[in-house]
Amino acid sequence: MGDLEELYNDIIMEHSMNSYNKKHLDSCDFSQMGHNPNCGDEIKLEVKLNGDIIEDMAFSGHGCAISQSSTSVMIDILKGKTIKEAKDIIKTFIEMIKREVKDEKELEKLEEAIAFKNISNMPARVKCALLAWHTMEDLLNEKESSK
Amino acid sequence: MDKVKKDFPILNSNKIVYLDSGATTQKPQMVLDAVNEYYKSKNANPHRGAYSLSVEATRVYEEGREKISKFINSPTSAQVIFTKNASEALNLIAYSYGLDNLNKNDEVVLSIMEHHSNLVPWQYVTKKTNSKLKYMYINDDFELSDEEIYSKITENTKIVGITHVSNVTGTINDVEKIIKYAHKKGAIVILDASQSIPHMKIDVQRLDADFVVFSGHKMLAPLGLGVLYGKKELLEKMSPFLMGGDMIEYVYEQDTTFAPLPSKFEAGTQNVGGVVGLCAAIDYIESIGYENIQKHEKEVVDYAIKRLKQLEYIKLYITPNRKNHSAVISFNIVGVHPHDVASILDANGVCVRSGNHCAQPLMRYLEIDSTCRASFYLYNTKEDVDKLILAIEKAYKMFEKYIIKN
Image (cartoon, rainbow over all chains, first blue to last red; front, side, top):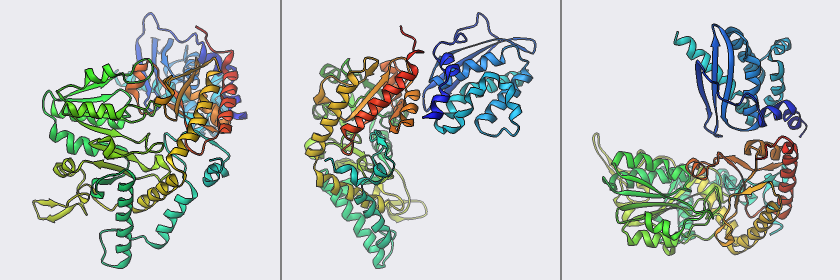
């Protein structure tokens, strides 16, 4: 029970139940759907770019507290970053969940998203935490290949 | 009945509250012993060798078929076909019966409660044959009304697929009425008994269903064995589904003649150990008796419903007509996602399923994404219910201050 209560902490609860990032942008340059078919979680990311910088982001959709809060926290972190920085942060987050981070210092760039570290102890919920990050990864890759 | 739990090693060694029997049941020692004994002393490839051990494995397999045939009151054991699970049995019917017997403008009618396994194959088959796929929807009580049944099954209906008990709502459908009406309209009926046979006697002749499928692992037997019963005249006319060894008569370079029933539908080496396990499971169920199982389950499920109804933040997805409800309870903590609830319950030693339960069209019809599902069986007790309630209360407390009240 300890792990779990640590996981469902204030950061995750606040972001999942009442996120200011859950809305639609007035105008967006890119959007991407993410879906976990096994559990039905579904999110849509909207991104507005200013040159190489992620100027604004929002999400819509439905899912569990873990997937919703993970999406919202990701948006907080990636807003204002360059695409290159964003990719690096996403990579580190995925590595953290998969326990592949070698240097703990690497995690500093994840800011609040470090709250999800313990999810790696709950294999059944890993895909919930990763949904948004994989979706954003796809979005950025597609953007690049469409150049 | 209080002693039943002692027969299930996993429930004693793990100290868990297992409430996912709708997905698969735990296995009593008697079943584990029977399977173990088969592999220790009787295992060989059936129907193959001329040596005595293979003859023995064949005898065990065919006597098992005889026993299972009697258990469901099939007129002959040749009408009992073994598959790897109920899904495969349903696919067999869709491919071998559906593809050959449906024509343009014919209709297949399913209930919206069907498991994906009795739904997705029919999408494929109706598209291939240009026939139509229609659904019977449930009312506010999570039941199929007579009007719905009578308006959807028509002269154009050739096949009706109906689950005996819903794996989401636990609704017991009046399948005798549906079968009678479908026959009057000239349709055949496929009955999915996967969720009913663990809890109630299935007499295929009394029900008069044309096909009945179920799986062993939902009724105390090991994973990996499904059963298909069919009316003889239908099975005999159908072409084989899977092809290969043991289902043939003569094989030439370009052509093959097929073995008679039941072998025609059993390609490749079969799951003899699974049949042995299912026979032991039948012995176990019969030693307790369906009547006692039902009486016990009713007490436990009644108690669970009563306790759940006392929690004002719980929404139940069950019929208020208790006599039409089996041992499955779908519920949600209003405002909290079922996956979060299931994780917190799991941390408290309570195993429930969360998700769409392989019934996405039903979920969409009910306008929900998913539910938590507690499904009960003969080994569950009122103490299990108490632990479930305690864990739900804990989950609610964790989320209470964050829940958005509309």
